Image (cartoon, rainbow, N blue to C red):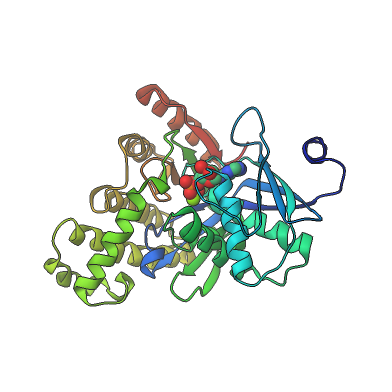
Length: 366
Ligand code: ADP
Ligand code: MG
């Protein structure tokens, strides 16, 4: 990649930084409600090569967008949204400078094997990798939680996607061996070892979503309306003993709130199940979570439902669910130890035959 960098930007030794995509095990659409999530890092990563410039120009290119790489540029302080993928770069520089971090212009080359728009958070991987590259090139005194917060702010304030904090916290703090059990309200987290007696499986359905297009923001607004009506600051403040309180809400707000309240409890139950190594119970929680996302939160699509049903019919799978914000994306599964690769390929093949889509097995990585 250094050669490619130099071919685009001229001689110079860039710094290198990267950040992983993430798969959320359970706890979907709970982060922006102040609740709990349980993501882990996937092997796929986004890489940034970056070299400072003597002026305040940013030049950036990505190998992920088109077959022909094009170099985009802008001046620090003159960030203007509406430029597609460059908005993620512009958003990062704008919010980092607004937060008081100072750096010069730079040249940056982005590459990635995190699939885009597949529920595995390529956007947070990009934001975090870029912030890490800036930290390293300009000696910024910024810690991993601050990096996550700035990434989220870039996406909320500049890109216009009202995502919660899970994706950036996972990209910045998660590793592949543990799940990050995160309280999205306080940002307290614990690392929970992944079960050794099970294989994690992630299948990309080949149906890409488009968060910024609005469905995600609509769900978030529905939750805010629900919590205002109920007189709580966030839906996190309700537990399942209080489900009757949701009856005052008009539909679909009642179902949206029921998903969030029940999903928060499923995250807590999942952490308990992992700690007890109770894999059948963990698997049931995956299926329950999927059903709640499909029926109450209405963020699944028929392709994703098909993959989950194929998993349910497969004796090697403990549980499966839509992972990420939804409207397409990927399915996360838990398989009996040693069977993950084969089961994943079997399910992906059956899904491809029935849907005509082109799935990819991302985990276990080959
Ligand atoms: P995801 O679930 O993958 O995070 P988003 O819609 O949140 O989906 O973010 C995807 C967008 O992030 C892409 O459309 C693109 O604008 C930007 N992006 C992600 N990865 C890259 C990359 N490697 N190079 C350039 N832009 C990227
Ligand atoms: Mg994203």
